[in-house]
Image (cartoon, rainbow, N blue to C red):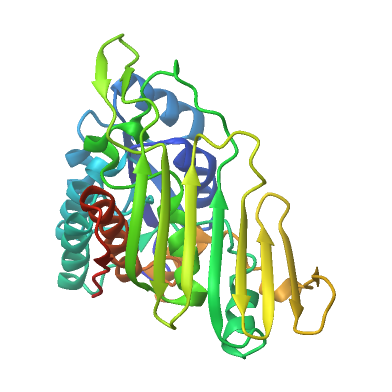
Amino acid sequence: MADSPIRVGFVGAGANTRLRHIPNLRALPGVELVAVANRTRESGARIAGKYGLQRVEDDWRRVVEAPDIDAVCVGTWPDLHRDVTVAALRAGKHVLCEARMARNADEGREMLAASREAPHLVAQLVPSPFTLEFDSTLASMISDGRLGDVLAVEVHAGQSFVDRNAPLHWRQEAGISGNNILSMGIWYEAMMRWLGTAKRVTAMTMTAVPRRRDDHGNWHEVKVPDHVDILATLGGGGVAHLRFSSVTGLAPQTELWIFGSEGTVRFEPDSGRLTAGRRGDRELSEVAVPAGQRIGWRVEEEFVNAVRGREKVTRTTFEDGVRYMEFTDAVSRSAATGQTVDVADL
């Protein structure tokens, strides 16, 4: 498909699909937006009208099976990611799937297996966005030895007070979100880019509001935690402490610390500030990230280029998706059993 049009269909059109995927794909030369199937035909019609899609489908299977569609963008909640992705790949369609990959690692592995059965098709996951402009710099600081041996990592995310009266959110429904907890998977995916995978985890979780009403007033048991603390051993021998929470009101801003035997790095995603210092320094100093290394968000461009055979997907592969889902599953097992759990790898 080096020069022919790439015709895209959308299954689900959540916030990220409307904010990024649809407008960014539409702006690329040679890309046609063909069809959308959303949760209701009415919402699909609004999206089609606003963004200029050619038609609306009542059933996502009609998008996947349509002969005039070459690629499918999966923008649903995680509970449909596996079914839509596997069906699309088996129908000969390239796939761009929204993160998180799936509800659990088993579903992720099914998606990976389907992609390996069709190696001529592009299978890409939407990447964690927090560190895209800094990934190259962080990776080089670790790999070239500027920090020495990585000994400890700290990630703390969340500054909100618990809202006991808020209605049930889909991310709090285990049947929809699965084992995904808050921003845990997004941060772990980013960390894998420069630190590799974790080997073992010990986790404790808390659900501050065990029951919530849905939009229709019906009560539901909440099984997705509001707070998780994780201790993880990294492949290089260091230890990570990760905290993700929706109950830590007025906590310090979200930040990442990497402590090495010879240097320290601090990353503040809210301000986009990267600072570092080495043994003998009195304080951290700003790290200048060259413009050429601030790659940033280019998900849709990467996907289209991969379909045209011009580059390979790096952000994010299905293999890496399974890796972060295995971590997610290990955290859930550890929290449920009170035991330290090994993180499975491919």
